[in-house]
Image 1: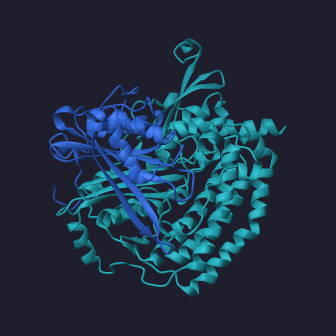
Image 2: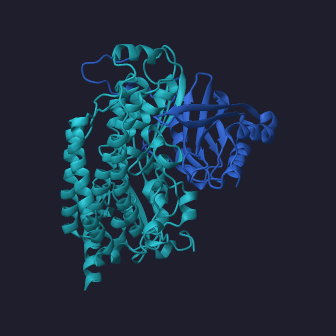
Image 3: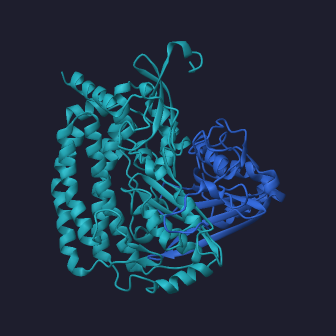
Length: 178
Length: 414
């Protein structure tokens, strides 16, 4: 498969997703003595185009590596970033690709991508239990890290009222509770 | 045949939560048909300590470096390494080149000690304790060197955002070279012991096979992935720090044997060759180490202020001994703690391959097969959890499994 330059990748997303594409950004930084480039891409898409975007990544690279899904509570929205890496296997060729999608709090759901990347199952399970994002179509709905007796509807990564209530938190000896 | 169809003929053995191979907790539920493993289910979360939560709610960005260091006792370099790379990207800080080289040196020292530690554990798992003692004795040399350079054997507190906290000076080079020469002198002996020994070959060849396609689908990374022929190594693909100046190549077993099987034996080859590679990288770093400062901003109070004002996000990736560590950090202006912190340790993805590699194996092969991934539970789990679901009488404990494994070695040797 031909390797595209970072800007060409962004253009290909824009072409493929049309209205679903919001924004693309190339980040570059020089490192160490030889000043080789460390490059990463950030691509924002709408939720409706999200699954197509992942499909497009699978076309750029056979078996893209999904490192992790990170999620941030931004108040009104929850932001998920799917951290992919593509073009691995050769010196200095790899690109980190962060696929960003924002979900409004009144509709916290995202389609599963385990149909494209089977190894996404752990991080989808974790996002589900920790952030309260409903992953639609996930083949294994069980919790990953939280115990079975952990209360329903409490999500440790949330910063709103659905986060862990004060009585669940242990205050360090000698400190005041926040 | 699926597990459901065979339900009547099979029996489920829960293994753990005390880890069958390493002294760390995880629970495996093995579905067996006689001696053969049909399916495995992995229950993580036994040592989830909520470290990300602390980083997002209690500590400031500099305190979190030392928290990241405590995610794992063995990989206490790669976690702070990935973390500071992420913060530097988020805050727009560039470390001086000398710091990049020092970072790479200590990261490679960590790799040598971790791989030797693993080699000992793997030998112990098949009941070959002579090699276990040998590997761990040999490992002491690098531990002494780490202590000499950083002042501590573990939790070295070397990292600071925008540099490192301690310099490696010219007069320390001879002592470092002495240790590297020691490893070069015994490398051939290690290779013979681990790769030509009959007992090790019997227990590791064609055991726990992970095919390249499965490794790619299940996102397996690090030496376990490379042993299956996936040439993925962050130091090669997207080099960070001093690795960007060198041509590091991902090591796959076909370099030595010409073929890739993806079994436990291949995982030994990869780790062994990586020890040699690490020695070469440290030598290159010493040779080409640039002069200059080791910190971008030596005043901690000023740095803290910069970080509190910074707004942005960053991804830090580092190749740990077990595979790729990735940290995502988001900083918000006016907020002392991190807005978001997500940690991904290599075992997180490598655990997904456990059902595949255990399938068709015997129960006595579980310890060595599972250990061959070099799993690290503390890295993967981060909240305190007690498992109440496992009654004592169902649990096959470590001693029992280990006894089975040792018996198998004895049987094969007869």
